[in-house]
Image: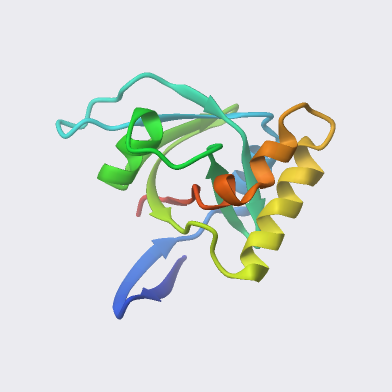
Length: 139
Protein backbone atom coordinates (compact mmCIF):
# COMPACT_ATOMS: atom_id res chain seq x y z
CA UNK A 1 0.00 0.00 0.00
CA UNK A 2 1.34 3.44 -0.86
CA UNK A 3 0.69 6.73 0.83
CA UNK A 4 0.84 9.99 -1.09
CA UNK A 5 2.58 12.87 0.60
CA UNK A 6 3.33 16.39 -0.50
CA UNK A 7 6.37 18.44 0.36
CA UNK A 8 7.10 21.82 -1.24
CA UNK A 9 4.46 21.14 -3.89
CA UNK A 10 6.03 17.86 -5.04
CA UNK A 11 3.88 14.75 -4.78
CA UNK A 12 5.76 11.64 -3.71
CA UNK A 13 4.46 8.16 -3.04
CA UNK A 14 5.96 6.07 -0.28
CA UNK A 15 5.23 2.46 0.45
CA UNK A 16 3.86 1.53 3.87
CA UNK A 17 5.44 -0.99 6.22
CA UNK A 18 3.50 -4.17 6.87
CA UNK A 19 2.42 -4.90 10.44
CA UNK A 20 4.90 -7.80 10.50
CA UNK A 21 7.77 -5.55 9.34
CA UNK A 22 6.91 -2.93 11.98
CA UNK A 23 6.85 -5.63 14.66
CA UNK A 24 10.30 -6.91 13.61
CA UNK A 25 11.75 -3.40 13.48
CA UNK A 26 10.18 -2.47 16.81
CA UNK A 27 11.46 -5.63 18.49
CA UNK A 28 15.05 -5.04 17.34
CA UNK A 29 17.31 -3.25 19.80
CA UNK A 30 19.20 -1.76 16.89
CA UNK A 31 18.73 -1.53 13.16
CA UNK A 32 21.70 -1.92 10.87
CA UNK A 33 21.88 0.52 7.98
CA UNK A 34 24.17 0.56 4.96
CA UNK A 35 24.29 3.39 2.48
CA UNK A 36 24.44 2.56 -1.21
CA UNK A 37 27.15 3.62 -3.59
CA UNK A 38 26.14 4.96 -7.00
CA UNK A 39 26.85 1.52 -8.51
CA UNK A 40 24.35 -0.07 -6.08
CA UNK A 41 26.91 -1.80 -3.86
CA UNK A 42 26.62 -1.36 -0.12
CA UNK A 43 28.96 0.44 2.21
CA UNK A 44 29.58 -1.08 5.65
CA UNK A 45 26.69 -1.82 8.01
CA UNK A 46 26.27 0.66 10.88
CA UNK A 47 24.12 -0.10 13.95
CA UNK A 48 21.67 2.61 14.99
CA UNK A 49 18.71 2.94 17.31
CA UNK A 50 15.35 2.81 15.55
CA UNK A 51 11.79 3.68 16.57
CA UNK A 52 8.38 3.68 14.98
CA UNK A 53 5.64 6.24 15.43
CA UNK A 54 2.24 6.18 13.73
CA UNK A 55 3.20 3.24 11.54
CA UNK A 56 6.36 4.90 10.23
CA UNK A 57 10.01 4.15 10.98
CA UNK A 58 12.54 6.75 12.15
CA UNK A 59 16.23 6.95 12.96
CA UNK A 60 18.29 9.81 14.33
CA UNK A 61 21.88 10.62 14.90
CA UNK A 62 23.11 12.87 17.68
CA UNK A 63 23.78 15.73 15.27
CA UNK A 64 23.47 16.55 11.56
CA UNK A 65 26.57 16.09 9.45
CA UNK A 66 27.52 15.65 5.83
CA UNK A 67 29.91 12.78 6.55
CA UNK A 68 29.66 9.11 7.49
CA UNK A 69 26.53 7.02 7.00
CA UNK A 70 24.25 10.00 7.75
CA UNK A 71 25.73 12.23 5.06
CA UNK A 72 25.80 9.34 2.58
CA UNK A 73 22.10 8.48 2.99
CA UNK A 74 21.15 12.16 2.87
CA UNK A 75 22.95 12.47 -0.45
CA UNK A 76 21.49 9.33 -2.03
CA UNK A 77 18.09 9.14 -0.30
CA UNK A 78 18.53 5.34 -0.38
CA UNK A 79 19.90 2.67 1.94
CA UNK A 80 19.47 -0.93 2.95
CA UNK A 81 18.43 -1.89 6.46
CA UNK A 82 18.35 -5.13 8.37
CA UNK A 83 16.97 -6.43 11.63
CA UNK A 84 16.41 -10.08 12.58
CA UNK A 85 14.03 -11.55 10.00
CA UNK A 86 14.04 -8.54 7.65
CA UNK A 87 16.42 -6.98 5.15
CA UNK A 88 15.03 -4.27 2.89
CA UNK A 89 15.98 -1.41 0.61
CA UNK A 90 14.57 1.86 1.92
CA UNK A 91 13.90 5.37 0.75
CA UNK A 92 15.26 8.03 3.09
CA UNK A 93 13.32 11.19 3.83
CA UNK A 94 14.93 13.99 5.84
CA UNK A 95 12.13 15.12 8.15
CA UNK A 96 14.38 17.09 10.50
CA UNK A 97 12.61 18.21 13.63
CA UNK A 98 9.23 17.96 11.90
CA UNK A 99 6.03 19.34 13.38
CA UNK A 100 5.80 19.70 17.17
CA UNK A 101 3.45 16.69 17.21
CA UNK A 102 5.80 14.51 15.16
CA UNK A 103 8.77 15.58 17.30
CA UNK A 104 6.87 14.69 20.49
CA UNK A 105 5.82 11.31 19.09
CA UNK A 106 9.37 10.39 18.04
CA UNK A 107 10.92 11.69 21.29
CA UNK A 108 8.35 9.63 23.21
CA UNK A 109 9.14 6.54 21.16
CA UNK A 110 12.87 6.93 21.92
CA UNK A 111 12.18 7.37 25.64
CA UNK A 112 9.80 4.38 25.74
CA UNK A 113 12.13 2.05 23.86
CA UNK A 114 15.55 3.15 25.13
CA UNK A 115 14.84 5.01 28.37
CA UNK A 116 16.70 2.47 30.48
CA UNK A 117 19.85 2.79 28.34
CA UNK A 118 22.50 5.45 28.70
CA UNK A 119 22.47 8.01 25.89
CA UNK A 120 18.70 8.26 25.51
CA UNK A 121 18.59 11.90 26.57
CA UNK A 122 21.06 12.77 23.80
CA UNK A 123 18.61 11.31 21.27
CA UNK A 124 15.80 13.69 22.26
CA UNK A 125 17.74 16.96 22.13
CA UNK A 126 17.04 19.70 19.58
CA UNK A 127 20.28 18.80 17.79
CA UNK A 128 19.30 15.12 17.46
CA UNK A 129 15.70 15.94 16.50
CA UNK A 130 17.03 18.05 13.61
CA UNK A 131 18.77 14.88 12.35
CA UNK A 132 15.62 12.74 12.07
CA UNK A 133 15.19 10.52 9.03
CA UNK A 134 12.07 8.60 7.97
CA UNK A 135 12.69 5.19 6.40
CA UNK A 136 10.11 3.85 3.97
CA UNK A 137 10.14 0.56 2.08
CA UNK A 138 11.56 1.25 -1.36
CA UNK A 139 8.65 0.54 -3.68
